[in-house]
Image 1 (cartoon, one colour):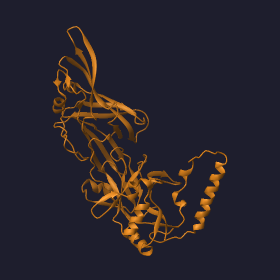
Image 2: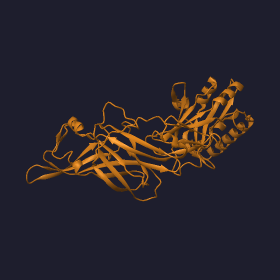
Image 3: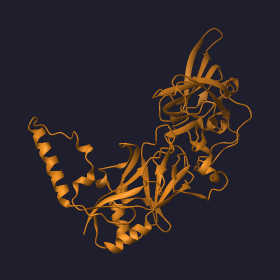
Length: 435
């Protein structure tokens, strides 16, 4: 295949012979077992199923800042730090209400508070520390004003906090565990929110503004995905209820920081190297000739431009029918050593609009590669099926650009660097067509 917009015609007999060989092999295997099986079907490149002409399009690209993300009330959120020598550092903190789960409110007039414990369930860790427990410095701080029930909060939003904390200390956490629950025993200032108090449900929400949860240093950079929907993500009050001067009963009550409680994430990025311009100018872009950067948490996204090749191909082949097309995105050797993001999303740009590429909104085109990361013979790469997207671009004869972002970029801190458009192994669209 030639670079840029040159066509390479392939003898269709090769595809027929290959398909015949696959069918013959399937028949041989099925003679040993009459039951149908899908084993091995996912190993075949879908492009080999089509007879036609193979071609490849190359374009230009740049890295842009992502839009500020709306983070209100998502079931998953981020907490902690991530750091590497390519992107720099980023941190995530959580702002949340504390909701009374009892419809009748609370009556602690005859209760003594033993302890108040904040527990959070973690589904995933992004960490460049070794195995075993590591010390993490948490702060839990009361908010000075309430979280609005009418306002949608974004990743750039914050709420002022008190100078005194409910918790300010170190706990040991094992980041290599798949799922764990972190428990923070809050201090006497938190106990005072409850001891001797009587509130209706609405009165409690009005009296307690909420809390901010964060890690306060990056000596042990660990980012965790918090599961707000988990049963153990909550605030628990342990108390002694006194019926008389001589008898008492040990009780515990759960308060929600998910259901019935509004919460949001705040993200902060400190870029280095190529991306340092974004620290001072949010309107800048970074040329993608060598590297393209994908950073979650409202970080960075990639814009691809195949306009010149689309126009040239459309002129040469105005009646081309696209049988199969995929966007190939090789992961750079300079990408951070941690695991890359699981999958990507693609958006088509219009003059004033942005929307999913057609292949992602059509349920009948979900087969094939959907933006997941694959291990090739020498490097990792992403594959996105874009057959309908390419057909539409060729029908229009122009390309306003394709945007790439990390899927679940509010819930995972995984980052990736993609080879630039001038690299020997650049991003490209490989496709099969006939006319």
